[in-house]
Amino acid sequence: MGFNFQSTWAIYTRELMRALRTAFQSILAPVLTTSLYFIVFGAAIGGRMPDLGGVDYGAFIVPGLLLLTLLSESTSNASFGIYMPRFTGTIYELLSAPVGVAETLVGFVGAAATKSLILAAIILTTATLFVDYSIAHPFLAVGYIMLVAASFSLFGFILGIWADSFEKLGIIPQLILLPLTFLGGTFYSIDMLPDPWRTAALFNPIVYLVSGLRWTFYGSADVNIWVSFGLTVGFLAVCVGIIAFIFKTGWRLRA
Amino acid sequence: MSETILEIEGLTKTYPGGLKALDNVDLSIRKGEIFALLGPNGAGKTTLIGAVCGLVRPSAGTMRVFGEDLATNWRAARARIGLVPQELSTDMFEQVDRAVAYSRGLFGLRSDPARIEEILRSLSLWDKRKEQIRALSGGMKRRVLIAKALAHEPDLLFLDEPTAGVDVELRRDMWKLIGAMRERGVTIILTTHYIEEAEEMADRVGVIRQGRILMVDDKSALMSRLGRTEAIISLVEPLAELPASVAALPVTLTQDGRQICYRGGDGSGKGKAEVAALTKALTHAGIDFDGIDIHESSLEDIFVDLVEEREAGAA
Image (tube, rainbow over all chains, first blue to last red; front, side, top):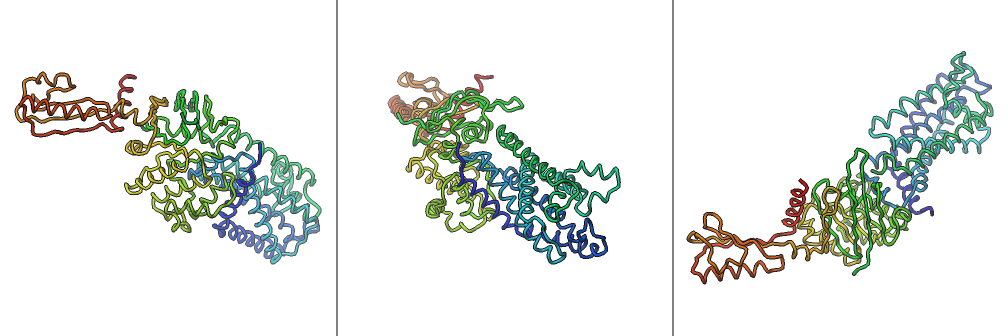
C-alpha cells in the first residue's frame, strides 16, 4: 500500500499555517514565558547560585527550560491539531480521504514537531541575551531535541484523540506533565536532593529527558546518556504503537 | 442497463449499545444517476453514507465502489468519492480558497488554481474566496462544503441533506448545480427531508426505515405505481345514492350526499381522465355541481403512505 505524499503535504502545511495564524499564542507566548524564566532564574537569581558540575547556574538551566517549553508545546500543538477537527466535526474530511495512519501522523505530528523545533531555535537564540552557554555536542543536541519533539507530539496526538472535552485536553499537560517537568531537574541537579527524594526522582521519566539534553549541552548529566536516549526512543515507539492501534480499531475516530 | 458504480450487500451496523442502525442493506447505484435516499429521522441514511465514506465501521456486509472492495482497496475507492456532510463542519477561521485547496491536496491531487477557481465561480464563491468561512452566511457555508467535496473531482458524490436550512432561492440554485454535476457525469446520492427535492431531481428513489431498505424504484415508475388522484365534487343538491353510470368508478358519496369523492388513478394521468369522465356522466345524469377540487398525489404523499403502511404492518 502506497504513501500519499500529496495528502501528507496538505495536512503538514495546513497545520503550520494554523500556527502562523495564531502566532502570538503559538510562538510569541512561549518565547516570552521562557524569557521571563531566564531573567528571573538565570540573570537575577542565577548570579547568586553556585556552579553546578562546573557549569554556571544560568547556563545550567538552559536545557531544562528548553525542554519545559518543548514538552508542553509539542503536546499541546499536536493534541489541539487533532482534537479541534474532532470537536468541530471537520474530522469527516480526513476520515473520508484516501489517507492512512502514516500520512496522518507525518502530517499532524510532523507539523507539531516542526513548530516545536522553530520554538526551540528561537528560545536558544533568545537565551544568549540573558546567559552565556555553549553546546558541547551540537549535532546530538539537535537530534535529541528532534526526538523529544517527535515523541511528545505523538503523545499529544494520542491525548487529542483520547480527550472528549477541553478540560481533559488540559489535564495531562497541566496537572501531570508540568509538575513532573518542574520536579525533573529543570532548575537543579537531582544530585542536590537528599535521599529518599533523589531515589524517588529517578521514577520521574522527565528526569531522564532533562538529563539527556543537558548531557548534549555540557557533556555531563545525572544519568547515563544512553539510558536517556533508550527511554526516549522507547516512549516514541510505544506512542506509535498506540496510534497504530487507534487507527486500526477506529477508537474515538470512527463510529 | 447502466454500469453499477456502487454495490452494497448485506450491510449491517450495530452500535455498541445494541442499536441496529443498518440491517442487512442491499443497494446498487448506477453510474451517472441521481439517487435520492428518503427516510424519517434516525432511519439510517447518514449511517449508510458514513459506512461508504469511511466514517462508520460496518458490523457486517460488503461494499464495492468502482469495482473495488472498500475493505481492501479503500484508498483507490475513496479518492473518487466526495462527501458533503449534513452538519456545517468547517474550519471557521480558514480562508475559503485555502479550505478548498486543502481538500484537493488531502485527496492526493496536485494544486490546481484554475480548477479551484472554476469550482468557486460555479458556486458563486469567487468573490468570497479571501474571506474567513465564519464570516459567511449559512447558505454560503453550505456552498463551501460542496466546493470542498468537488475539489478532487469525485465520480461519486454523497450529499447528506444538501439544502437543509437554506432559503428557497438558494435551494433552487443547488438543484441547478446538482443537475450540472450530473451533466458532467458525476453520480449523486442524496438524502433529503424535502421530498420535493427528490421529486424534482432524482432518477431513482430509495426509502429506508429503521435501517432497512423498504423499496428502491425509478421515480417515474414509483409515481405511476403508487400515485393517486383525488377529486372532490361539490353537489348543488344532495344525493341519496350514486347514479348507475358512475358505479364502475372508484367513487363514494360523502358529507351526507353533498360531495362525491373520487380516489383512483395511477399517477400516469389515468385519474384525471376518469375524473373528466365522471363529470361528464354527472352532467349527463342531470346532476348539478358547483365545485371540483382535484389533487394529484406527490412523492411526499407516496412516501408518507409507504412509511405509515409499514409502521402499521410492523405494529
